[in-house]
Amino acid sequence: MGNKLSELALQSGHDVISGYRDHLPLHGKPIALDLTHASEVRKVVSQAHPDAIINTAAMTDVDRCELEPEAAFSANARAVSNVARAAKETSSFFVQVSTDYVFDGKRGSYSESDETRPVNKYGESKLEGEKAVKNELDGESWSIARSSVVYGWGRASRPNAATYVYEKLAKGESIRMVRDQFCSPTLNTNLSAMLLEIAERGLPGIIHAAGATRLNRLDFAIGLAKTFGLDATLITAVDASDLKWKARRPADSSLTVARAQGLLRATPLNINRAYESLHREHVKSN
Image (tube, rainbow, N blue to C red; front, top):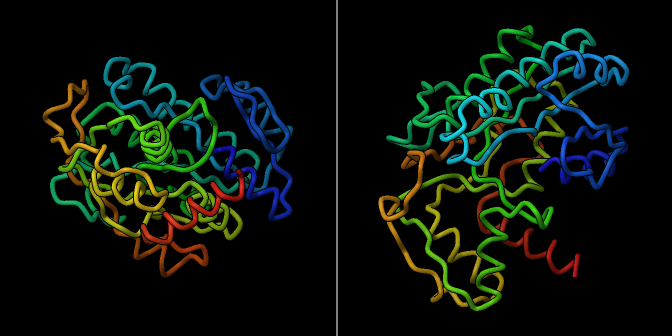
């Protein structure tokens, strides 16, 4: 996500500083940075004095967050507070990337004004990150961009919903995909364009920056297989209860993207256009 965002920002003519902890970024000026150290964050942000900060850093392994809640809240909440505080000192517009998992998943198609009620430590920690942004910053100086199941081409060391399906099926290996868990799958290129526009225009408040199609994980994988000419019969449907997850997942955390559609030029893509874009990127890179 961060690499795709910095790539697009450079293409748009921006000066880009890419903070990292473990993996050297592919684009932008790299700066080693541990967001959990407040003094370190303050020093780096003060020296860079950016017009905008987009925070894509997070601990996103849902089961690991459940097993290591202290680490989850450190990365997803306290670190956000550190960055938001530093952004306030430099009057930088702050964009925090959040998640559909702040909702309980009982009904789906959530809007920005719907009540948040996470069902696992990942969602709880990301919601605390949202609260940190609101507590540290004035109302017109921040945006919280919630997304859902971000996928796309990126680092080989960081597989995602799409690359997992593609790599397994391309090798002729069978996979199991959940049919009773719904979301709004979001192409990383589309999300990056939305985040960049939000930062450039300083659009405040909560914005659901996700894909425009509500889809279960099974149908997402089948559509991906068809797009790339892979064998969809290798995909077996399972229920979430069949999988031995440590953390509970919301059954339907899909997001309504009407605000983004009405506000942004880089509008959320429906799933067919996203598949096409993903395929074009693959052909171009090969």
